[in-house]
Amino acid sequence: MSLFAIGDLHLHYQSVLKAPGQLHERVWKNHEEKFRSNCAKQITEEDTLVLVGDHSWGKNLPECEQDLQYICDLPGRKILTRGNHDMFWDAKKTAQLNKLYQPRLTFLQDSYETYRDYALVGTKGFTFEGPFYLDRRGRIVGWDEEAEVHARKLVDRELQRLRKSFELAKADGYQKFIMFLHYPPTNILEERSGFTDMAEEYGASQVIYAHCHGESRFHDSIQGEYRGRTYHLVSGDYLRWKPLRVVE
Ligand SMILES: [Fe+2]
Ligand SMILES: [Fe+2]
Image 1 (cartoon, protein in one colour):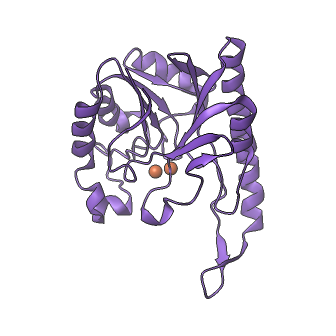
Image 2: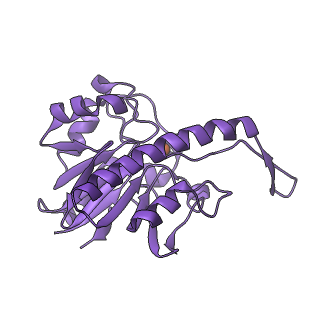
């Protein structure tokens, strides 16, 4: 029995939208087939797979039905968290989604799930992504301060949602946590953030995130050991569509 994670599947069975990389880069060619076949090799029905956002390019639920069906058909128990492109998923209507898809899929928002004695907590997260102003050598010399103020508000809202997830699990007696975000835990300027601080406050052993795809984005945030926990980037193209085994 194992816990796996991956993000940024960006499925598009019913949508004409695609990421630029999906049109041109080799790693995205037939990525749905590559991922399906890797899951069949790695994941059993006893395993749990957490999909950390950007599931589908569909703009609403009817445009995502085939994408969600593709996820339903993968082996094991599937838990989904929200990404910035998941327009089909209104955070406030998560209960309706769960009602529609239970027991095939679990949509995690303002709640927690469990794996063995771990509580799986998470939210979409947020980070300031610029615009940054560069000098001729490509060094950051400034950024859009208004955009940064706006980003800070979104970060605060996501931190509140994450705290709720931790607190519910803690109230039920959980002491071991794995934390899932869609956005990276820090922006490219930060060494730590409200998200890394919260991971430390509650003692999450691992922090899993995605959103950074394309070679140039893979090192936008923390990877590996940092201040006592382990950070993993699990965007699909980074993992070459092989889900990461998070816990045995
Ligand atoms: Fe994405
Ligand atoms: Fe994203």
